[in-house]
Length: 499
Image 1 (cartoon, rainbow, N blue to C red):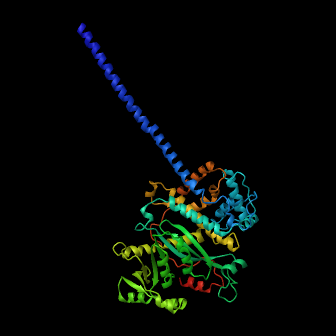
Image 2: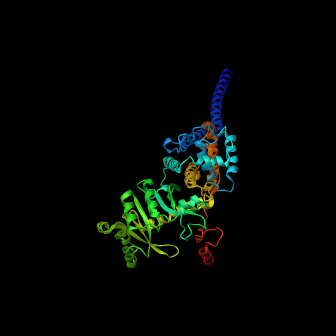
């Protein structure tokens, strides 16, 4: 009997011990289950949001430095400019001009001012903001030189390259790709603009009878889709001369793409002497260099030729400099366009093993990105519906639209996470520009700590609307304006009928 009791006591001890162990293990498993499912997930979510907020704050602090708080004393037209406390101080003036250039003149300045300043006040970006009259904008922008917008653009571009993701898809053979091209912009018909940009239309009536126009040349990073710099001159200015002024603003070590209007002995020589990098010119097969015509008659697909100084160079520089000028060695590649047009590419990319013929041809056609940029400015954003009617205000708006493009493109890249980059769609450029223009006061807020929430909302809104490229390649269309035909456009009528 005693032995039986001892066995029972031992069995009870063993059972209690096992139960204690099992319950302990079960408790640990249950705790781990709930921790992974609820607590750990919440901690990871909190950590993700915190890191994103810190990252947004880091970028936002950099964007706050784009617009200067005060106008430089050296650029003031009068020492009393922007010294008194008014409704439109210098930073708010710059911000408002950046906002109104995005969506053309579908609304008047008074309407845009009412909406913009009301939104800025309700969002606590500008606590004391009140709508201004259009005359206040006209008077205030006269005190600001367009060169200030050019300085702001240079600062925005420098900032964009600092925070742009370092990824191989933005490079070609570890080099950035730039394109230079010019486009004609139509201006308001005012005497000042006609005298500045289009004094003589060639019709013998000093430009009267049509809208004046100006020639705008732009440097464009075709892989990042960033406008780098711009020059504005008369309609009948030289694209080559304007390109010479833009070369110093291009970072060295890249490749510059030029269209058919740029090849010339003097200009190629200037590029070689001033730019530390590579270039690709498209050159016509007719009315071209003798060396190019000889190459095409040989039937070869690529070769190395020597470009000699032309007779026009002799007329401009004189016989002595013409004799002293040395031939330029270039690599030439035959190019057959999709429509069958034959031309050549002239380049200093001599290493055929590293830079094969097909890659160079494909790279040149990426130059079309700058044409898309001009289309976005003119058609999508309607920049030609200018709000100002003076040469200074026209230049202000043409540089302001580039500043907004640089900031919007940068935010578009920052708004896409690593997981979203595998998706087909990308943030829509028009939506990004409109969203930034609506809350442009976030660039110069009264309280930056409150404005960071608005900035995060801007990023989310830009990331929300996607653009999906067409699955099939679109049919090429003739490059004709869609404006109404008038009596001054007889040649355009013929093109439309025969297109």
